[in-house]
Image 1: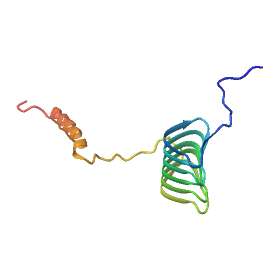
Image 2: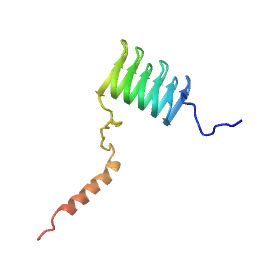
Image 3: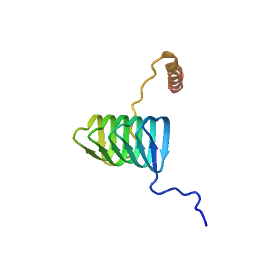
Image 4: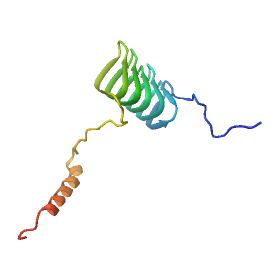
Length: 152
């Protein structure tokens, strides 16, 4: 009897169960169902399902997604994003197609059409003086190099 090695089931489903908290970046070529809490970034080549009891705090990049739970963050969905009636989404959406059921809540920005897999982020300036000092010094040096020398 021979046994196949290195293969996975074609319809494999990854699961973050209720009561589970995952922090970090998760990448999968398969579908995923979130019934627990994810804090971080999900890269899903298949379908992402955020169940009614599921919470995502972060970013989701997926081929398609069904959201019934709570999302705070950015969603980049290549094909169809379905916001179910219990969905609560706060953030930015970039998707090929958006379907919203009555009762779903969305607070944020949405861009539909061809998805380039990137949501632009707004750069924020450093808030403390120590962090800003190297930036100022580099700018001064660059400006000094660009100025012509006196008497030339």
